[in-house]
Image 1 (spheres, protein in one colour):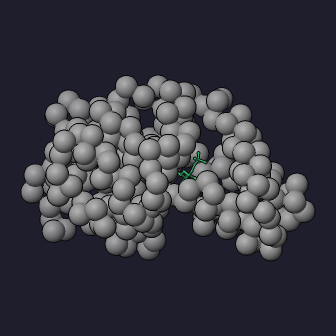
Image 2 (cartoon, rainbow, N blue to C red):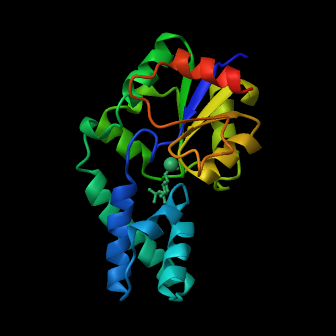
Length: 220
Ligand code: B16
Ligand code: MG
């Protein structure tokens, strides 16, 4: 099994920005007179901004015109950006930076594959923007996960075949996107949710790329 590149999702894999998305969506919901819970927030993980808004409106049983939706999404994003502008390297999830640095030292290419239009801002704030050979974010992608577009663009950027790429993902739609793109996938989080991944880990702490690759080859 040849692994030439690793592609990382951002939210839930490298950082936990879901808590900031949650606070911003909750504030928007409150303005429109309904509650939005942490449980509801699970449905938004890995989902694009406008698709997240549709889910929020469904939860609140509200309707809105396309123009109102644009304004709502922009309002939510302005609050979200206020939170992420305060981020620093202490918010990198345990072991993630070391894992990426180990990959680069062993000449495995590293890319980011995120639905977020704010991915570059976040990578700048946490000091990882120069750790990636390719950054594919929500500004470069038309079709949202589970469509494999985000990961296929990364593979093309890197000049690596999909079959030699491993994707690290925390969301079910992201795992499906990797599989749909003909890539192997390591789920980061709960095996109950990420059961379609080739391997599930609970994080990168004390884990080396060679451990992961060895476990991955046993699963195949
Ligand atoms: P933005 P990922 C995703 O990031 C988040 O998980 C999801 O909750 C969010 O709605 C989406 O990015 C879009 O983010 O509003 O910043 O463009 O997991 O794909 O890294
Ligand atoms: Mg994610």
